[in-house]
Image 1 (cartoon, each protein chain N blue to C red):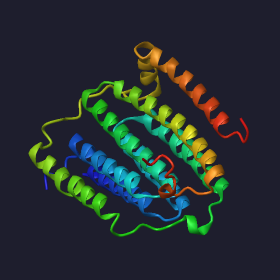
Image 2: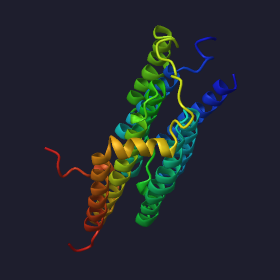
Image 3: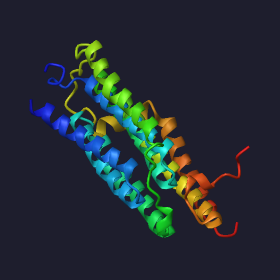
Image 4: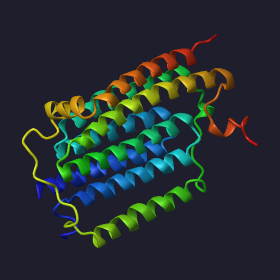
Length: 167
Length: 105
């Protein structure tokens, strides 16, 4: 019962912050709502025994990427007329899509495929811990891991070159 | 009531789908480039939630490894994307997507 309450509270927080992200006129407001959404999502990962994923979510997404986004927004120093609000008509199609997917198809899916379709498996004690995930990364997925470091190097060099005033 | 109460993987998947739809709505609707990029990150996070859910369902840690890769790739993409925004702002003095029309046929 308690886990269901925790799940619904975290889900409401996540979706609430997500809706705030797409509806704020000020991009700083969107960025701060995004940070709230990431924290709620990290808590959801924790309920799924994904401890490494939760910590990495807070460290990298909330603490790295969103800080970078906020820096750039403040760097560009947008004038007030750049922060224009949404038109009601433009928002109608995605709103209808959202209502259909979330409001109708989601609960319909829950009715057609009730809880028995997928069940949470029994997991060992260290599931999702950094040691267990590390064993997996450095044995089965070593090559993609090394390619990832190459990708990050390319991204850093690319960002430096793209933001130079004169190439 | 038993649709709601024991929280099954399906609940997490429906939550992920709704979050993805919110991300799509943000990317397609908003004119501000920053909010569009942030909605894209929201979509990536919805996919991450699906990965973690199925990893928990199968007891296989491969989903967690993919989550790490998605997070790292999203960080690289945000870095380069924001550099592009800065370069674009230098030329156009705006981040309004409606005004970037030079590629329009």
